[in-house]
Image (cartoon, rainbow, N blue to C red; front, side, top):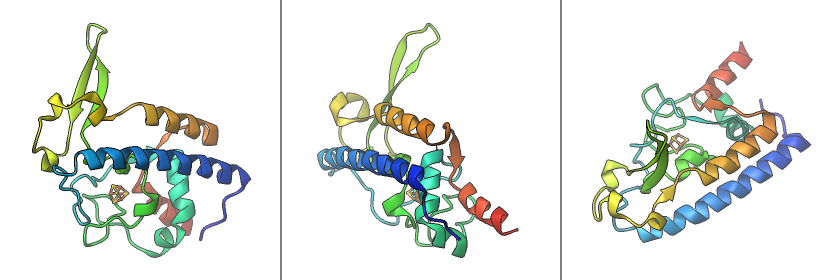
Length: 179
Ligand code: SF4
């Protein structure tokens, strides 16, 4: 059973939807640049791993939009994301969290080295690793991890203090509520 969002949740979810729109616009731009190398297609669930966590605001957003699914359907068996269907498709695609909106793109991020300096790291799904090596791509042709995470973290803190929630736990929460 789902209850409608209250005023605080409405405002928080509107802010989250704006972030998602910006993410999608930027991700679509990069997908157009890399179209020839991207093997991403409906039914490919290589990146839909089990154990994925999302910001608490994103978990609440999914719960508010997908109450019927959470109360009436079974999670995908452990081993892959609980929200996959039997054909490897996402059952919450329109409301999927941030981390799912950039998968498949060349990713770049920085980490601190032991000596306190920064090192840039890059990665891409092995299915999309044809063409120019990801290490040789211009920075602007990669998804930079960091800026959107900061926006999401701020929205999350304003919502409920911040935190991470396993996607699968949304189904477990449903089961707990029914006990
Ligand atoms: S929420 Fe959807 S897109 Fe994200 S990991 Fe799960 S099935 Fe894949």
